[in-house]
Amino acid sequence: MIRALMLCLFCSGLAGCAVNPATGRTDFVMMSERQELDLGARYNQEILKQYPRYEDAKLQAYIQRVGERVARSSHRNQLNYVFTLVDSPDVNAFALPGGYIYIHRGLLAYLNSEAELAAVLGHEVGHVTARHSVRQQSQSTAWGLLGQAAAIGTGVGAVGDLTNVMGNAFVRGYGRDMELEADGLGAQYLARSGYDPQAMIEVVKVLKSQEDFAREQAARRGEAPTAGGYHGLFDTHPDNDRRLQEVIGPARALAGGNQEVGRDNFLQMLDGLVFGDSAASGIRRGRNFYHGELDFTLSYPQGWQLVNRPDVLIGHTPDEQAFIAMTLEAADKQLSPAEFLRRRVGNQRLVAGEELRLGALQGYTAVLQGQSARRVAVIYRGDSAYLFVAAVKGRASLETEDQRFLEVIRSYRPLKPAERKLAEPVRLHLVRAKAGQSLAALAKDSPLPADGEAQLRLLNGLYPSGEPRPGEWLKTLR
Image (cartoon, rainbow, N blue to C red; front, side):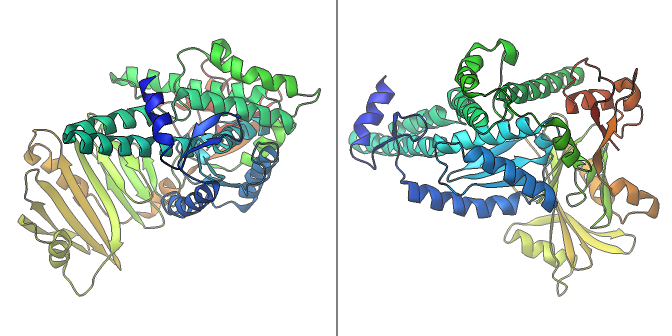
């Protein structure tokens, strides 16, 4: 109550309050619609640098078409919505202010109908129409300004720090209330555009199954499950989640007699979709990494985990206390690898330096001194410089992991001809289920031997123990 009162009082001295176009409620906002559109356009350029588009013009056009159909039935149908399929294996989707909406191919792979795709896009449209990002940003800014005002008024800077902490806690993520609001709005848009609003529940089931699978994997490894994920956590099954059912309920009244699901056509669009890592970012296979386009491979210690991003490759210990990151830059041929590395670290001191001889390749490695010492290295290859930075967290010293860091760096080499196939991505392929055919039998040929059967169940909406019906299309991996 106190926080709400402070925001309302503060509202009178700032940009103000506005009627929300989706809910009809008066919201505290500090951004006009024109500013919102400009902000989205700017952020969109940055997002596309970090998350490249998936290179499939037909699939991109299909997603834009489905998204536009839903957006036309929204409360802000005058916006120019742009829907983009992101080349990322993450199970995620998100929206920027002003109508820029992204779905990762990692999430797309687990959907099983056009209505489910429309549900994901409709949920993100709901965030846009309800101006969730604008409300979040406005509240965050207000708490920052309130903190500054309190610090000035009392002369105690700690008051400002405390208020900022409160503000960050208040607006972290969208929170379940905004996610449920987006579900309800998205379900309305589904029904109005001719899709079955039940698809919103089906999508949440997909996400819940992902969450359950991640928990089981963590328990098998003896680790605590990671919190978060797309949309947020649900403590109960979606069918039994009262608040979710309440926000979806009104949309069912809008549905006509023949609401579209569109399973078969949707699945045909996914045939050949890359699953997991892409060729452009390189392929993780166990403790090895293969990159066909750049023609190299790396090996990591047994049990280490790999994080593969467009701009960096990170290997780390299971407890995340030691890590080694590799990035790619243009080489300066006028400098030796040692000179390149020294210039790269600036005024910081390098010690224990040594040249690297990796076949015909040359490089240099050394220890970067400081409060937390780091192993650094560079390998020249053609016009490229492969940079490595390795460190340990906490009180451990670099020496505890340095030998393993060096083994990773020295494992860099060009691909052998027989390894070229290992640098090719896994893709989705459709098959017709035969009578008596089980997913366990299909999983015997899976390129994911560790959890192939579970992944097939997740991909086909049959997790944890469902079996296909004869004649229906199934997604397989190969």
